[in-house]
Image 1 (spheres, rainbow, N blue to C red):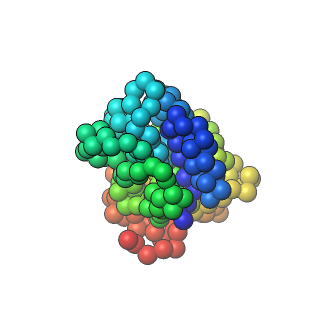
Image 2: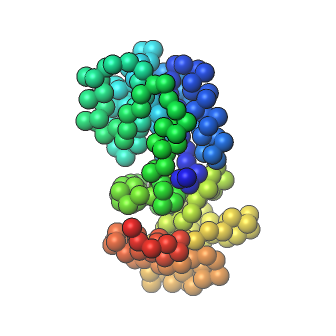
Image 3: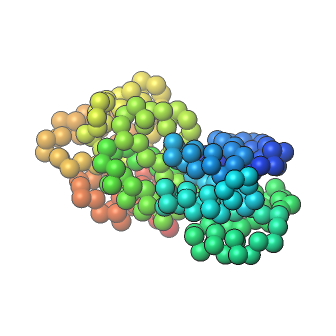
Length: 245
């Protein structure tokens, strides 16, 4: 079973949505439910989800149009389309738009669990960096490598992400607005939430003292920007104690 995931379920059939929510919650996932496409898009504007189950037929905007809008907002969003009808033209648009799977109703529990099995199967990585472009590029590379990836742009958001669900490895920039990377590690240690951390920095000489201080925490590697993605993936594999894919 995949690591703890943030899942959005979108279906106007409230009983079915609740059933999927119960199944996934029982497996340790954090589930949010919406009953129309507009609400689903709004939720994606506010937060990140590792996976979304989206019904095709919804009140207002249909599920495929809502899915395509979500992909515009979050190009790496992973969405499973659900349908109980023969709507081949809509399904073709969804598949062309990057849907990860199409499930046909009535759903079986095994269908739902298989849909989440490959998402973030290698673990959950939290990227903490105030450079939005850099963080998103790392997230894209991590998703392609089979990880579930989340992004935080400051220490406070990172702490909230860590409290909200399991994270296996943190990729942490030392220079953050407000709380520094070093202070974040200290806060985590005091809260008993230390975890394998890979430090990234564009200022290795200026940050030498902070890097030295981090040795007493769970820092497994220090990488200098610009980051070689293959080196980062190897560092994450080493931090998790697993062989590369």
